[in-house]
Amino acid sequence: MRVTHLSLGDFRNYASAELPLAAGPNLLVGQNGQGKTNLVEAIAYFATLRSHRVTGDQALIRAGSDSAVARMGVRSGEREVRLELQLNQGRANRAQVNGNSVRPREITRWFSAIAFAPEDLIIVRGEPSGRRRFLDDALLARHPVASAALADYEKVVRQRTSLLKSTRNRGTTVPSTLSIWNDQLVEYGVQIMIARRELLRDLAGPLRDHYHALVGSDHVPRLGMAESVAASLSERGVSRETPNASELPDVSRETLAQEFHEALRMVQAREIDRGVTLVGPHRDDLVLSLNGLPVKGYASHGESWSFALSLKLGLAELLRAESSAGDPVIILDDVFAELDAGRRARLMSAVGDYEQVIVTAAVESDVPDDVSWQRMRISAGTVAPMERSDDSAVDAAGAEGAAPPVVLTTPDPETSVSRAEARDDGSTEGDSGG
Image 1 (cartoon, rainbow, N blue to C red):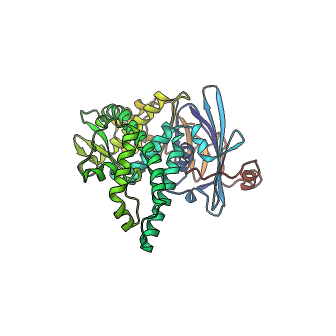
Image 2: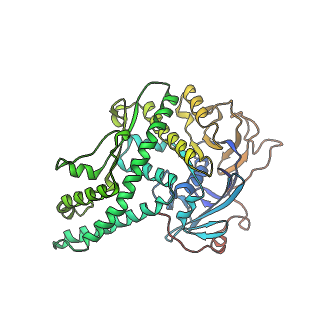
Image 3: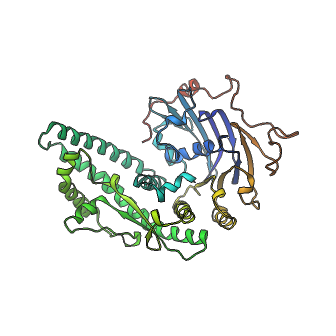
């Protein structure tokens, strides 16, 4: 699988952008703040329907605009598909596949990418919410149909929490409708818990292999889950919590559902008192350890960086082995600058045979120079091909005899991607892709 072309309209700092991409390694070079990360952010958005940099879509829409449009050509074997997303201020987002309107969540069925950026350090060093986000994005990449269960679960948590708050504020008895929300919470929650357990079991081996290959040491990285259901049951001496993915218990769906219901019964009084849903996948945490110690708080910066990167590489390996659509697109956003020469070479070796790799860098010297890169220069929101690798040379876009820029950020209004065009091309309102 690879991206053949990306078109943007009113996305981040781009009024309009056209980015052609080739199979194999692609390098986007530009100083910080010029817009190179915005390009790969748009590509990765098609895989997860959310940015790896911000929590909402509003920041993705160019200042002063009501909507942003992103169009992308994707090739898998001999098949090519055209994907389109329109992000709207205060309205539902829209999506199209080959000109046909679809729900935004359908887009993820057609494109797979694994992106790694400095922000991904929050997976190992940040709060549990960052690790849950990694798990959910991984589930979505592995099983796009999981988007429905994840969205339904989030809705149930919001509705159930609202009921708990109203019960607390009014001082009323437990409403009969709470059991209905409990049933739905368990139904969707068990699906997510089982899928997460399967993911961790399958990811444990690739994580270990990639960490060893990247670091070149005998360190032992491990994955596990701290589940809120197990934590609640442990108060009564019924804990199945384990820090190692390889030792996660093989519990049936029915047994897990029974335990979930029991945990809800045990915390019901506390939930009403606090007005919060205390048990479920939204309260779980991914346990990361290195040589038997938690990565957070014990691992060095280099070890933390390598652990997070190995997680993403392991996930890419899983997707590659399981998908009939080909390799996921690998996106490495400003990664090589954080690595020494040895790890740069080992990282490039790990991803070098993927069908397409897209790398951003502030300067060319940050990336291995023995790679046949297709190079593009990003400067002040302008995308232009590079014909040489001298960072001190004049920008290829302005050098004598160089090809003209592929895109300008201030095009003639008649030739830019307009919001009116996006609204009039047959799209219909859908959900926001949650």
